[in-house]
Length: 410
Image (cartoon, rainbow, N blue to C red):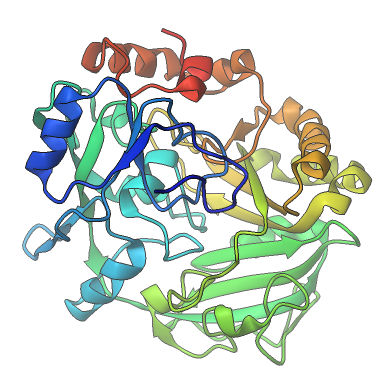
């Protein structure tokens, strides 16, 4: 039985964990249940997957990956991880627009919580979704398609509308990526650096001036960047973003060309990127506010750095999904990987949230945050519409939990 999340900071309150082996079995389970929550790969650091009722894992459902070449879409069963589908998509000549840092995460869970990669033109992973298939509170299957009135509220849905069984994803032609790592970038050059390639990540421990590393992922048809760039120097050997950690876990660097799915993530599927000895927080600000937000974090670095392993800065394109971190605005994401000590981390989180509050900062639903419910309600214009949508499809609150009750009052 699963008793805790991947990091171990959330001990689940569930009575039982079910592993249905068919959609029909799942329907029967949902129809007869009173309180249920879907359980993905456990990579959330908040209580988003917790419940005092029962948890449902989709890992034993029959794996499905059906490619429609004419429509350029793929239908994927919800329990599959990105690393289990991307290689097959590539072999068929297709790609997803972007990927997160980890290929180890479940497709449905990543989309439901607004997980993302990086790149000015790249939306969250959920923006590739064109249809959602789920089992509703009555145990019946239904589908919501792009263009339906409820679609924009049904993708980043936090598990509140039912148990997702499959997603349809938009595809594009397969492409190649080269990855370079640079060392030493000034804080004031962050905006230019983030716009310089298909996907860019900036890493810092907030212990010195600027960013220790820049991970630049460019299409393999683009001109090779210079050895010296924006004052940064190309790393002569592969690096891990956390000093002292073996870079063998990371995807190939040094400009070695390779397929999109082997370069866009930071970590290889064959390796566990961490033992779970960490906590994570992430905050999303309007992209135009990034320079001021970075300076605000820099002013509280002495309260943040002691709890920090590494911080990553990325960008995300705007979208229309109601609970997406990038809903309605071009976005910059400030990610913080903390030490695995809640007592040390929570004061750092409080200092960070206070510093970022003036920028309309949205927290990541699946990570550690302390933002007050009233503030959260002011940050997502469609939050009340989403609460009404959940009540319409789940009037008894079968899929709710304490976290949803706190942030989505009925």
